[in-house]
Every structure is written in C-alpha cells, then in structure tokens.
Amino acid sequence: MLPARRLAATPPVAAEGSVFVKYSTAGLGRVFVVRLEDGDVIHESIEALAAREGVLRAVVIVLGGADDGSRVVVGPHDGRAAVIEPLERVLRGVHEMAGVGTLFPDTSGRPTLHLHAAFGRDDRVTAGCIRLGVATWVIGEVVIIELTGSAALRRVDPLTGFELLEIEG
Image (cartoon, rainbow, N blue to C red):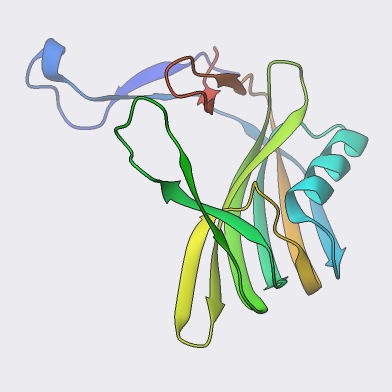
C-alpha cells in the first residue's frame, strides 16, 4: 500500500491557493453477489454480511426495489448552519432503486456503509443516503467488491459530527 498523497486537481497557481485531493491506492479482493429479500433493511444487511465475512473496505452497488415507508436523507435543511440538521423524506409507495456506496470501518473497526441511491416511481425521483432505513421490496441485488491494502477509515469530524472518510498512509 502506498502512503496517502496530495494530488493537485489543477496546476497550482500559488501554494496557498491550490486545491489538493487526498488519496491512496487499494487492491481488489473478493467479490460478493448478494440477493436481499423482501423487507431486508439494506444498510443493516450489507454491514452484517461484511462483519461476518471480515470485509472492512469495499465498493457497493445495489439495484432493486425500495419498499413503501423507507426513509432517506435528502440533504441538510441548511448546509451552512452551525449544527447540520438532516432533511428526511419517507418514500410513499414502492420505488425502483439504483445506488452506489462505499464500506469503510469506523474507529472501532466496525464496517460502515455510506450509500446514496436514486428512487423512482412514475415520473418522480428522489435521491439520497439510505442510512435512515431503506427496506427491500421483493428483491435487492447487491455486488460488494472488497478493497484490500488500504488503511482508510471513517472518523467523526468534530465540526460537522459526520463520520468522514480519512485517508491514512
């Protein structure tokens, strides 16, 4: 594994005004193909499988149906407020779903999923984070691609209270 690096997103004009991206490399490990059943809560099911199989870091793709009453975070009420208050939507009726996310351990070593999905019904679409509880409707198809050789983890940011991805090298 290579150490974390700072990569100039654009050629720096001046060191003080430059924009940098933190990153590290990872290899590919196992691939899990998962079928979720009707009523399975997506993030709970994926995190439980990851813990059971010893998967700490992964890319996750999900496709299927989201059940009526599922809850999604669709942004903050005010993104610049001193205290970030999440804006929540409850899905009314069954929705089609497609999403992508990442799995990284928190500071206690527990694999934690961060997955955003789009939910469609008729001509309406809602997109957001599934963390509040999205239940599978009939079938959910998930592919988990394990990442190896990385030390990245989620650490609570004292300013926002969010568990942010931290690149360690």
